[in-house]
Image 1 (spheres, rainbow, N blue to C red):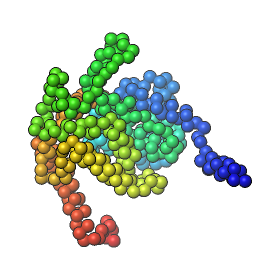
Image 2 (image 1 turned 90 degrees about the horizontal axis):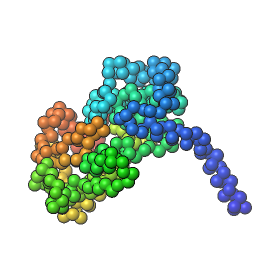
Image 3 (image 1 turned 90 degrees about the vertical axis):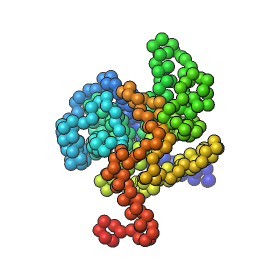
Image 4 (image 1 turned 45 degrees about the vertical axis):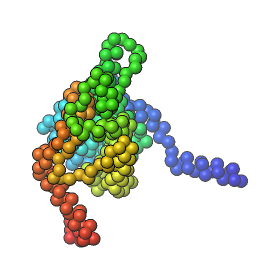
Length: 342
């Protein structure tokens, strides 16, 4: 009887959560869209689907207004392909959100896949990868799809430029296999005899590079990228009717707390003091040269030492200071007022 009951329970669970019979096909098709994103899509089937898609047929979407917003932006001109997509640039991010809206509000999976094929070669590759990744995570008919590792989509952002150059060199030589060494920026401080120059951007604060093995860990940085995809700070639950994942901001903040705690443990293990709390009126002392490159070949900018961050965007930091003060006032007064005064 017990065996029969267990079998019936297992059967009930299976029936309650049926497996999508087309899941494997969806996984393969969507992964293909990420392959060599900076290059044109050479998959003929996806090219045909994209060419035959009518972006201006609003019947393909569940939100006419959002789609028309993207249509207008597309006519005006989006970030060109080959340019670097900067998540922290408000204009770049707004365009990526508008592209996400087109993906998210597609009426069904087939329409979503077809509009993704359309966008593959028509929008900036960085915006495409970001918007498509968030859409796959947030759409109910694609949540079972596994995203590709970011280090395979954009290896230049996770692997040292020297290692990338070495791999390309061996590939050009026709070698089918080779050993390529990829070191963190702190490696050269401990090995001055290696013939590599010391990173001049760190100056007297080069001791922070002792933990570059942690801060530049490929998998750790991929996890951080996925957290930003899973919990985008611009995602509005009311706009998107998304009620299945509450307290996104709190979850992301908790993740950052855990990451900072582990970071301070690594600093302590290497004889360093804990990270100092951020202060608006203090310069950032340690410089940093990531020794990475973007997908278009441009080097990722280095940060010199003793940077005055207020010179970057004065109005933005004023807004941050105002928010910081209001949060502190709310904590001290033990009350929070809503926009309607309640």
